[in-house]
View 1: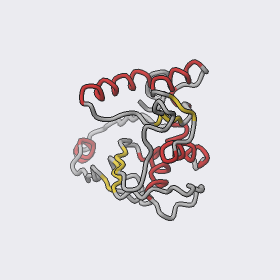
View 2: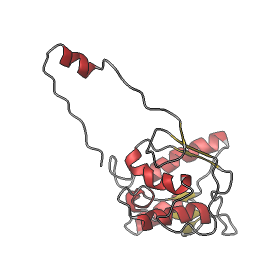
View 3: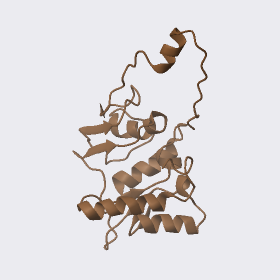
Length: 188
């Protein structure tokens, strides 16, 4: 999902259910935090939003729930839909976070759209990050992997390096002197 923009505003629950099926089948994984893209994927340098998400992931700070489903259901009941779900922490029976990001953890960032990934990625990959005070716990993450190249300001590994495409269909049509119309969706 793209946080309720390319799909309906209440689709997160379905994605969580699907992920939980895979977790159940494989016995691997769990939800540790939940957040709408308004906070986690800000691209307008509203660092206070990103800070809330970072604090949930690293310090276990934020609203607490026993499951990702409970978090989303509570948000929906309060008129808060996917894009705006507050950064929340999933906790054990003793109300401690099921997981936080710590020193020497590896992070695989599955977002492939750089415009919404840069800010949160910078928080984790730049030692000289100064947009907000990360507090005393600033985990050293030796392996931060992005799906694609986000920005020169993100110090991490890239799973799929950009490819230079030559002789694309548009180029061939243009070289043949033929007319063409290109239509693309805006990504917003």
